[in-house]
Structure formats: C-alpha cells, structure tokens
Length: 343
Image (cartoon, rainbow, N blue to C red; front, side, top):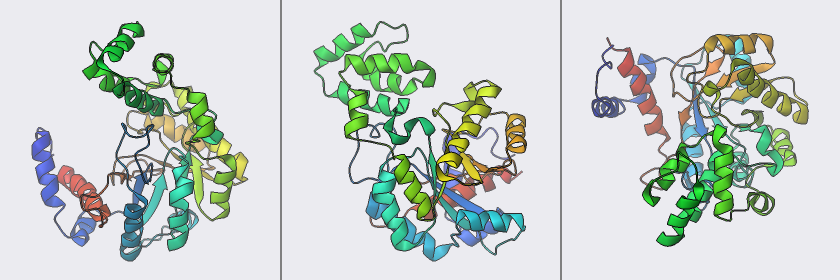
C-alpha cells in the first residue's frame, strides 16, 4: 500500500489534501452505510477531572454539530438502524449515529436538552463502576492530580516528588503530568497515593460534584427514547487483560444496563480502543451473547468485524467557534481510509 513507509507528516499532508475533496466523492470512493461520531464531554467550562485529558466542545458548539448533521445526513434511532441492518437495507448516503462515552453527568445536564430540542437520537455508553458516583475513573483522578500539582509552589512540588517513593516516579516536576497520564488501570494504588499526597478527597468530589450520571438519570435517558449501552465494568485497557477478563468487562457492563433498563438488547463501546483485543475472542463473545447487539471501536470509518462499528472522535472543538467542524472530521476519516486503500 502507498501509505507504508510514509512519514507521519507526509501522511497527514496527503490526508489533509484528501479531506478537501467533496464529501460525495469520498463516500463513493469509500462506501460506508454509517458514520458514527464519538463524544465524551460537553461543558461550559474546563472541569479539573477532564482538563488534562482532551479538549471538548461547549453546548453551543455541540448544538452547531447537531444542526449541521441533521441537515446533511439521515439520523436514525439505534432501533431503526439495527432493523435496517437486519434487512440489509442500503441507503443512498451514509446515516449518522451520535454516541457519548463514560456516562459523565454533563451528558444529562447539557447533551440531553439539546438532543431533545432537535429531536436527534443518541447512544450513551456507561461504565458500571462509575454509575451513581460510586467510584472515579483512574484517568479522571490523574487529571485532578495534575491540576492540584500545578497550583503548588516549586518547593512543595519537589516535596511531593520526593514523597512518592516509587521506582517509576518522575525525576522532576516538568515530567509530572506526562508521568501521571502514563499510569494505567493497574497503577490505581499509585494514583490513589498521589491523590492522598495532594490532599485530593475523591470520595468528597464524588459526593459533592457528582461527575457521573445516576441510575435514575440513565433510566430517564432511556425513557426519552435514547439508547444506552455498556462501556466496561471498570474502564481498563482491554488489550492488556486476559481473555476471560475481556469477556467479563464486555458482558457484565451490558448485563448491568440490561438489568436497570429492562431491555432485551444492549450495545457495547470499548473503553479506549478495541485495538489489540483478539478478534477471535470478540467473535466468541458476540456468538455466546447475541443480546449484545453491536460493539463500537474508535478507528474512524475503518471496517472491522461485522459486529464491530468504528467511530470518529468528535470531541475536538472547531477553530471557528461558531461553526461545526464535523464535516472536516468526517472527511479526514474518509481520506485516511482512501489513502491506505491506494496501491
């Protein structure tokens, strides 16, 4: 393939050029039935538990996305999409599905009213351990630590580094943020230790700030007509887990949604990515649990297993705040696939 051996800068340049092509040219060259957009958060201000992880759109910017997408694409409900796929019904142009990961409370506060206002369907993927603010995502803890560390004097920062007493600790305060973001689910004890050293009371934050949706809010989303799916039990990087734990994280998170909503079928979205997770294992999970209606990855419009739909990350705000950047994001994803397909 032409992309093999190309430097990242060259690939980006070619992809940028391809993204300037008309969408109809790209969709004809890379035929797809569906475009799935993935968001995590929408907010009016930078939240400490999110600030160091990714940028995200304001409600006004997200509403601009909704207005643009509704004007340009069919936007079926999840039930309608599943029914059309079962009938092998092909559309003249791709439809669009909107999804949100992690089950953040901003989904209920900001996203839900805008979706209802514009009558646009959505899939919300929730992590079982976070629902009702019972525990906090390790990456959200890491972001809180970075924020608290930045506010300290240089002397106090050095004291924190000296007190860490772990082999992998950063050697200087400049490395602290990258070090924190490099810690994974298996490093929870280290992350919790850093929280204690920085006097971050995670339990208090969960009780007072309530960063995640409650069971009642999730049930209301379902009553509103939105689809809800599983997003793992504890939000680990699944490719690092044994096969039986992968199956547990997928099955039990979907079972949780099934139990609280009393639904027959539940979709699943991979935490982080489906990359590196054995497809043979996933095929077995899908075969053994046919009530898991589909799985969602995060590789744009790439094709994968028939039961796995990839998604385009739409979190990044537009450069021009009054305009939606979803067309650009969609076209870049198509252009990336087109580049790899050229021999």
